Length: 196
Image (tube, helix red, strand yellow):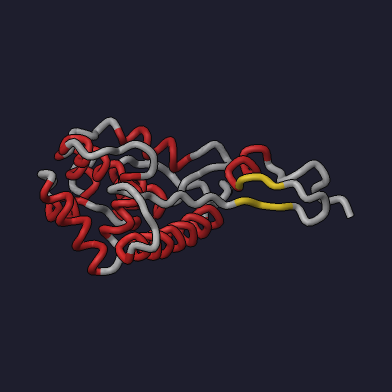
């Protein structure tokens, strides 16, 4: 295996070489939940942040790492606040940011370094990528709004507040409501699918 791409270096530097198999498994998926390169890049970056937060003694349960990652990549003020908090806790934020990977680098790693082959007959992941991108954008905006409300004193909260955003689908025929992931897992929103 080639050892030249950024993902190779980052995984080696953080002692995460065993994550190659996980990247391949998530990339190949099971036909219903195949992760695209953008989702894999985000997952890997959040994993790096979560490990560094854990080593520094920050809480990492729930969506805490995801929320901090989104804020690090958000507007300048939010990013600066989170970076300062992490630095005070002992996290090398500059190194961490330089280790974050893009979806293009993940693609190169999977196809070139790991030698995985893409089968054009396999289902694409653009739909789930689109949902993830929209959800991440919405989560970031909601997170900014909530933090602003807390700063103004309009909303009381503890030291850290994280935003969790689920996508719920509703059948307009029968009224069944189900989460997107559950619907994808079973291949249907409801029992009346396709009935007119």
